[in-house]
Image (tube, rainbow, N blue to C red; front, side, top):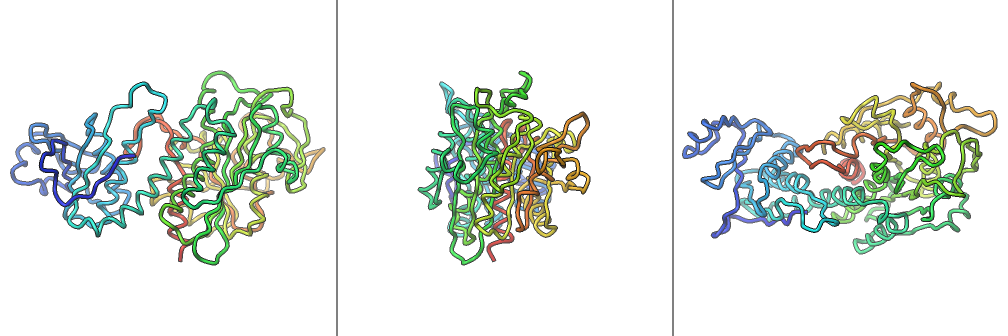
Length: 467
């Protein structure tokens, strides 16, 4: 993450480029207007014009009103700065919240993952944020930085290769969050068996790295029922016996993006000392092929006691989520939200533009959608119809895991399946397949893992569960 320094004025010896946020051409300082006009600068959002002879960047903000608008402007500046190690943004004259959002966007766009490179990836490392009153901006920046750090944790985890981020290693990374005041409990195979979590045990049975259920708890400071996040953490998904094709399988290292987002949200809540209690229940497994792999046609007894007929071992995510959702019921939550890279069906429906939103409570669904819009992680409501549940009727068990055949509404079937295990609390299911990874650069991130969901969950708690 960029090192951000709040300053009243530029460094005296500064040679770093300085970005000037401007809403339109009329706001360009008179000494720069000729150059701005020659470069075609209009102040439109997303526009960045470098004036290298002056060490300046004209940064278009348009009629920025939302925090997200300022974040995207900051991200545009970070992208345009190129390989400069340090740069500055002149936020003097702006409201403290807008200044902090500029820095947040710059940090999100400047993220790089260089852990396995011989040389660090090029790009900025430091940002000087020029403000009128650093003390006034500091609390806004602290709040924004917490969400950024949570998002970047999710990206870092999703970027890790599966040979290093095994289930054990993932659990160890989560246990390290204890330094921030998050209580972490990791259930190993024996405890999973005692809890009867047959779905999670079956999915992880074929791997030499055993399944885990990680429970992260932020106690907050108010006496209230917790908000619970449930995440799919498949550290690698071969598809199991219903094995995937080779093309694109390398991307299955990130099939734990839902769990990563939940972990990032928990970190954000802890860093900003949220008063709201929250719990994350993360199902970690590798869906591998081995002598103990589960099979199509198997019948599994889940943690809830219900039985499930396995149809496709590549539909493993809903099995581990079902057990995690059931386990979460013991915490008597006021709301439950699960996140998962669950189905290709949702990508067919929504592409890489929005995540699918399913659930049982209109109020919670509206809150989740509003939080997503606030942070640039948009959702789209999807149905769970009676027929979707009827399609899962089984001749041998309480229900089937999925259906067979082409052109099936699998995202809706998966949501209908999960609803059977979600319990009485308001529940929302976010199918984030398609939005967990960026094929192209965007204002708030380079190509690669997006961290989708981490900031959304943090914003949801801030907007609706802290008052």
